[in-house]
Image (tube, rainbow, N blue to C red):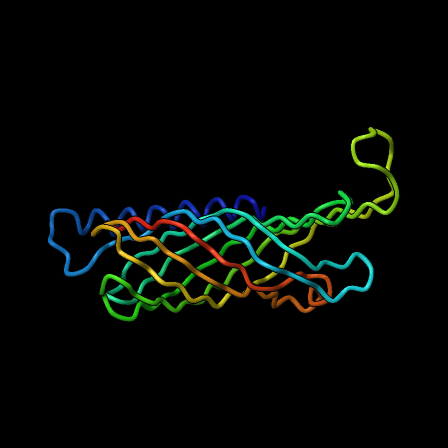
Length: 200
């Protein structure tokens, strides 16, 4: 049921964006309509658990799409996948997450800082091998958990206009769980993003 609701929401969002795009087609806008692109990211995360603790680097990929509500304010959505590997190949901690974002851009110059907030949720797959060896094809003693969390991510970015419709973007955020039951085991921390955004 959750999967169907997610697909329905994504379809509705894309149709809404397409509708507004067609509404503005043929008219000369006073500001851009859309901005979107892909990012790679890396960061440092940690959690509060004594056993199965996480502390180290994380990396991943994702992207965003936002609709301009004016020359400086925009609303949209973003989503990413991040992976942390436990030491000595003892498992992994993978987070796929996304949400709705709101951003405000200071100025419209060649270099522009952007302040934003994303609210959404994610799904975590956490595999921790207690005993066994990776790759020997023998049964291992392991802990495997799959759970969902509600998330919030304040972020700051800087956009540099390479061309009128292409922006090199660097961003930093701090992803935090707002699900009370996930406070101890959710690994939070800063992530640093680099990518290109295309403006229409």
